[in-house]
Every structure is written in structure tokens, then in C-alpha cells.
Length: 129
Image (cartoon, rainbow, N blue to C red):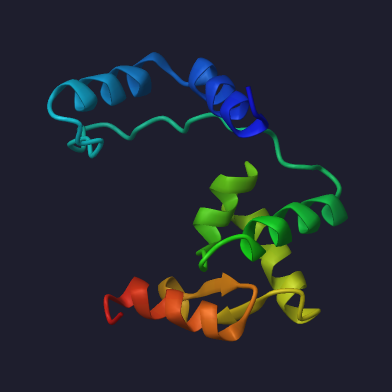
């Protein structure tokens, strides 16, 4: 089993029962994985713990962003397994050093390896691309 598949299996095994049941129900209902919102907040799915060391976190964030077509701070946080505040701080440090690029404003801010990719992601988030 490759590393990505193993991580997915581990993530599912550590997910709360309700999340797994929602995914299975959605799959049985017709293959659509969009689940109707429930009256209570969905529990967070456990992911691999983010590195504690800021440099290691920066490396993980950079790797995720560079390998993407543009990501929001929330998406980065989910991908590296940390809270949004830590991800945002790492993104700010990396952008300041020009290790990654930033485009867009407020909720449409996206990060990518190049300015062109970040701008395109920001436009997609706005529904203009």
C-alpha cells in the first residue's frame, strides 16, 4: 500500500462514527458524496498531526501549496493537519520569503507556487474563471 492510501485508511479509522456513516449513506444513495448539512456541526476528521517546529511546519505547508493549483488557508490547514491560525502564520512567513505566492483578498486569497496560479485560483474561488 502506498503512503497516500495508508494515510487515507488511518484517517478513516480515526474518524468519528457519524462521519463514516454519513459517507457510506451518501455513497449508497447514488454515489454523491455531498451530504446534507445536519443540525449540529460535523466533527472534525482527525488528520496526521502537524509538525510542532515552525520550520518543519513551513516545509510541510510549502510542499502542499507548491503541489497544488492554488489553496486557501483553510485548505492548507486541513492538508497539513493544523489549525487555520498556524497555517496562516506559516503561509505569511513563506510569502514574505517568496517561497510561495499569494493572490486575492480576504476569503478569496489563494496561495500557490506562482503568482499566475494563485491569481487563477482566486478567480475560480470568486466564480469568475
